[in-house]
Amino acid sequence: MSERVAFLGLGIMGSRMAANLVRAGYELSVWNRTRATAETFWAEHPAAVLADTPAQAAAGAGIVVTMVVDGPQVEAVLLGEDGAAAATAAGGLVVDCSTIGPSATREIASRLAERGIGMVDAPVTGSSPRAQDGTLTIMAGGEPADFERARPLLDVMGQTVVHCGPLGHGQMVKLINNAVAATNAATLGQALVLGARAGVDLDALVEVMRAGSGASTMLELKAEPMRTHDYTTLFKVERSGSGEEVRELKPYFKLEHMLKDVRLCLEEGQAVGAPFAFAALTREILSAAMGRGHGDHDFASLIDVLEGEAGIRLDGTDAAGR
Image (cartoon, rainbow, N blue to C red; front, side, top):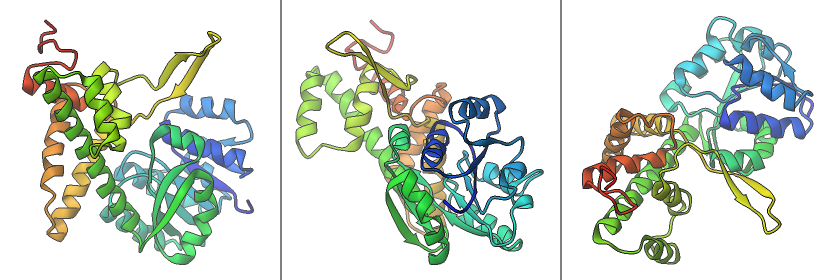
């Protein structure tokens, strides 16, 4: 707890990760590109200090955590105008929890090193419920000493924290993991569409797959939103036995972010001469879903493309809803 921490990026994941650091007793300064989002966080966690710029947040902080969308955003909040690096003293450490790919990570790290600032890449997986519970899986890359310095923070935000190797290796592991997850989701969607076209009971299909070798995390997380076409609701609302409303945080991962991760994985694979043909097909399905307006929806919305190709919806109607 001795080091003051700056946390940059308070989106669906970042806000929950930062909240866990506040609850753990860290002295935290926070910044978000959208001021209203930062103010909402501060209203809920007044122990944090609200900053106007990344540089202001980083002033006096030993560790700067970034949780934004992509490489250009990480570069901007660290090295752009009013970037955090300008206010971070030599000997400081950046812990980037964004998913930006190993190449971008190494480029940013080299520029930080010129200022005497270290870097650990620590992308996360687990979606919003695990971010809230502090049970994320975190894969980190960087020098062992830097990783150990960041470890106490990572242990607050995650349940499984793995040092994957040198700088950039956390990013590579994350990209491969997400490409596999997206491909699994696309395969699940095709299985459901096939079942619907064949007229089988989808409840029975899901039950058998869940108990058999077709079981997967994607089956548990995405079958329901695919079948209900609910790609936008962050909370699942139910009624308890006493009639009280129960709000359960649902897994939610924007399709445009998943498409970005799959693209990065394929680019890195091309650079090292390792094809990933199934992920390449998934990229095309995600791209088509983007074209249908699903970029801000959960990536379960890729089912819309698969239903369109088959001319049927999972509720048994045709593509026109008849």
